[in-house]
Image 1 (cartoon, rainbow, N blue to C red):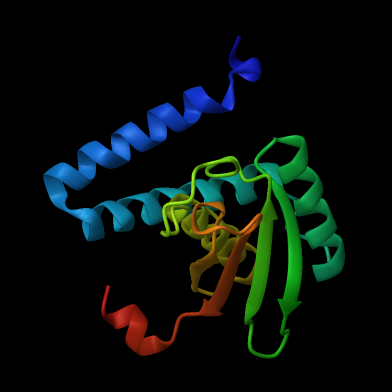
Image 2 (spheres, rainbow, N blue to C red):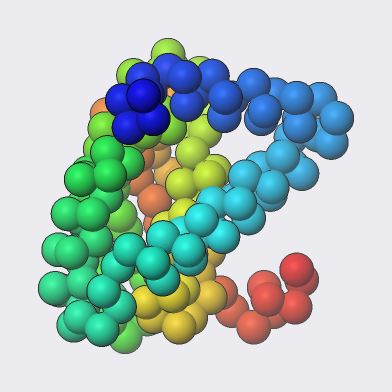
Length: 157
């Protein structure tokens, strides 16, 4: 049954854990936990499922294919500045939130970390990824801004 598990079962698992963690540790700690878990998953995903030797454009196409094949979502790169590392990425049909009711809040903290982990492994640079648009805020894709961590941000962790 594993590969045929309905999305609602995954979401039920994810959001009930998130709610319980928020009750016990507060929302900020919960968001950090989900981002950190997502980053760890992104690193493992990249190291085990992606060809990290590909040139950038080929890597992006490969990543898009693996994410879609895995039914995680449909990745698009709106912007990637090779000099600064700044990026804007969208994920359509996002596993975490596509179809959720509008709550006015972004909810894809795990995805923020997941994308940061993939970017870190491929570029060998630390990334901060922040969701700026989400299905739960009324968008029809999740949009993420990705930036390389500055040295002062790394010392605050």
